[in-house]
Length: 332
Image (cartoon, rainbow, N blue to C red; front, side, top):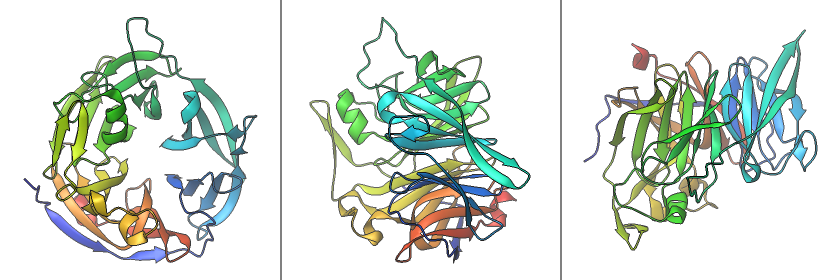
């Protein structure tokens, strides 16, 4: 059971000369600016100008517990001219705004929200994290609590509205196993959320309808190989293939950065075994549109606002920002 993609493309990269003194980072694009967040750099959040060959324009934030400081920030979304840094260990979301006035670019923290998830009737093992902006009035997050409790829907103040969604597998596993073995990423905008698991070839799509999230579809885009024993999830190391490294969406498509090797072959210390050179593209009906083969391996990706370009962090062999032109035929 392997889905066949309608198109296959080979994309060549253009490397920028920008020096990155990091090994890991998260990126997003707002207008003509690329934002890179990494706890390995100071300041931890940097803005680069795409038209000026990724010239560094501004830096914001540092590690700490005071104003403008973060302990464990995770870049989870960008929305209009704002982006979110999820303080994982605090259930907090810092909403940062990119300000561009008179050619002077800066970042300001517009607000910091604390997730209100208390529900006396619930016993929730895992706190919510990976808050993503669903639309102007809602956020979604990951929860990993099994049937009908895999995600959470919040209002604009991060007050819980409801739990929703289901586990990718029908078998029951312990909450700790779900957190570790069924982990994944969400990407959301315009009232639609997509979710992909890291270690299973699973993709699902949910849509907001009358203050509730409804599942549109879910698919396995490859054959899953696993077994559940005593609420523990075990992957067949000789057959379990593919790993989702990053998930993005735009107005047309869903993009999965995909490491096409056995799960057991993963090696953080080797570029060829820890960074991906394949992107799987799906539409919003769950159809497999295209498989993109990249000319270099990347560990994170971001999409331009016009849907024409894709950016990544590559090691060539030093960390650098690379750019790819997306195929025009996919949009036709």
